[in-house]
Length: 291
Figure 1: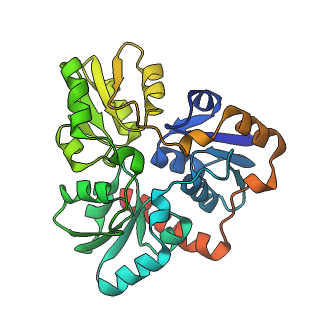
Figure 2: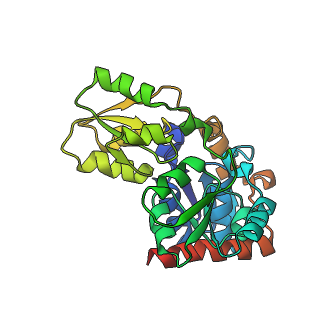
């Protein structure tokens, strides 16, 4: 394959239809790690494409729109983590994959929303500096006896954090038989009313495997397209019609087709060699801890 097109579950429907693979951060990270191609086009946001570039130093990685950033990933800096490590010298640093290459480079390992609890509990250290999502960090604390130090103070996904329990229960009142499946980036109050909490692939599999026929989905609304496509006999409802990530939607089919045809330099993802080497150690460590 000359060019591999990867698309996150939150991408526009037409982008998902055009991609070779659609998935969550962990699935796409695994695919990128084993890619057999010349070039990769990553339809997502900046940290995803950076991760693909780190795992594929001998391949070119392009993005449809170089301005599609993850605001949460940029809420924490490498300097913030270095400062936290000086305050908690015995702590391991676990950074969510939704972070910059520079932050990954000063972390001990990374995690995804699908495996955060598994990764934290696999560590030998009893203290863990967790960054940058406070809601995901809060979720992990429910399933571990380790001390979790969350950095920064206000790190969260604006899209997921705006969902409230009231929003969920309002939809539930209209569809009382529906099961509630939400992402762990949501507020604790939302997690509390859910029947299932997990990453996007986990949510998809929950809907597929459940005997229920109706579901309220609490994550970025691009996910509903994939669920509806793969589970056509089940009814899925938005937890909130406002759960849209504007950066994810910056990628359009026209931009993808242009990059596929022209491979412009300004759309090429670049991570300096030193940062890339250090960040790759943290990424590889995650795969080791997963077994």
